[in-house]
Structures are given as C-alpha cells and as structure tokens.
Image (cartoon, rainbow, N blue to C red; front, side, top):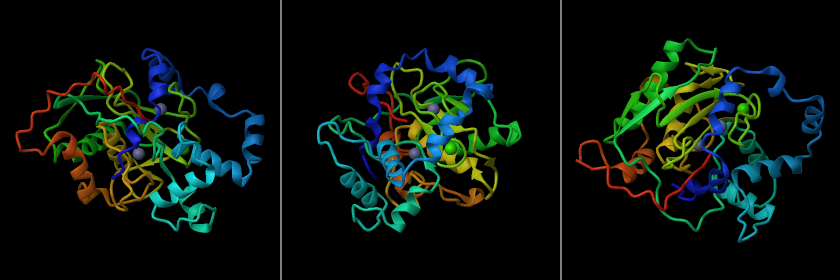
Length: 299
Ligand SMILES: [Ca+2]
Ligand SMILES: [Zn+2]
Ligand SMILES: [Zn+2]
C-alpha cells in the first residue's frame, strides 16, 4: 500500500475557506445546466488536445510534480507505470494508454507533500454521515441501503460505527455533483473520474466528505458504474486510506467490477484500515489521537 497520497492538495485545503464549499455544492446539486455545461470554446479546446496534452493532464492530476524534486514528465510516467505494475519504459505504449483510459477515482496516486508524516484518522469511533442529495439514477431507498452497506464493509473489521445523520451536519458529507462543484476539483463529465473524497481533517468542514460524479450513470449492478463499489472505495479515503497498488484491493485507483452481493473487504484494505483504527474486537481505543500537526487533505 502506498503511503504518499494522503498529503496531496494540503495546500489547497489550507487556502480553501471551510465555509466556502457548501454553498457552492448546494448550487451544483441543483444541476444548473447553464453554469455546468462546457462552452463551445471549451469543447473545441478539449477536442483539440494532443495526445501529449492528455498524458500531461493525467500525470498532473494523478502524479503531481514534486515541487522540490521537479520530476520530468518521463519520470512521472515511469512512476505511473511502476504503480500499475506496467513495463517501466517512460514512454507511452499501448498498455499505458489502456490504463490511462480506465475510469478511476479522482484522488491522486502520489503526492507532492511527501516529506510530511503522520496518518490522518478520526479521533473517535462513532462517525456520522449525511446524504445531501440523491442521484436520479437509483431510488433513494436503494442509495441509502447501498451507502450503508459500503460503510459496513469498514465497520466489520474496525471498532468504527457509522450513523446516518438526517439534517444536522455530519463528519462525512455525501454529495452527487457534476463539473465544478466548489472544491477546486471539478468533475469531468461521463467516464474518467468517477468520484473523489477527502481524508479526515480536524477543523475542516470538508474533511471526510465524499463526492460522486453526477455525470456517471450509477447502478446497483454490473452495468454502468456500480455505486456500492465506488462508495466503499471513497469511504476508505474518508477514513484516511491511501490508494493501493495491489491489484484486487478495494483501494486500487481504477474501477473494476466485483459482485457486490458477496463482496468482503480484501486483506490489503483490512490491514490498512486496521493499522489506523485497530481490529473490531481488540479493545482498541481510538480517542487519544492528536491532530495538531496533521492538517491533512486530499481529493
Ligand atoms: Ca467523470
Ligand atoms: Zn481513490
Ligand atoms: Zn468534489
């Protein structure tokens, strides 16, 4: 499991007024077509992106440059190839292109804030969540049940309990939103980025929150994008988990359908979450953590 992801976009978190995100999120929740649709000029620019630009956009987002080390595009491409266990060539080849085209989580795989240490986590065992809006793709009751089951995956192997808040603010705020939605991480239309989430941040309203791209078609089954699998992955970030480079892990960055009916948390993810919170029955006390130097953020 990688350990670098959790520091990414810390700088943005510091710059982001905590009370800024929610009013804008509410606006996007209304799906204002006028403000969210790309202009003709933007569509033209997108259509004209060269293959090199597409690679650069991918690397800038998921393998951001280290401001101190100044990695070249070739070096960052090699990082990406290494993460995904591809042939490390530093050049674009077919298998690299194939991976770059896969739908995936919007959280980067590496961070430029590698020098910070500490593992961000919640300093309590009872964590609340709130579903602020519902995708029209699924009935509300199905969404609620799906979200509940996704949290339960993590609750089954830790001392954590997840409680759904109704109206009051919650630790983990869940939104379906499209394009720009107030956190400087706009979604990208159908495909590509499916969702993203923020790690636990003490004193930040947005810490722990999980956002799902409303431009995806969300599904209960193996059609389109399975909400349960993506939600379970994003809630891993909400709890402080990084991306894993282990194929088959829930925290692997790209989307891969598994049957949700008999899905259990893979060992890699179980080890990761238990390293933060302990096991379910080991009497772990999760209330003595000091966040003071853990201002941590990612999306
Ligand atoms: Ca998308
Ligand atoms: Zn992710
Ligand atoms: Zn977001």
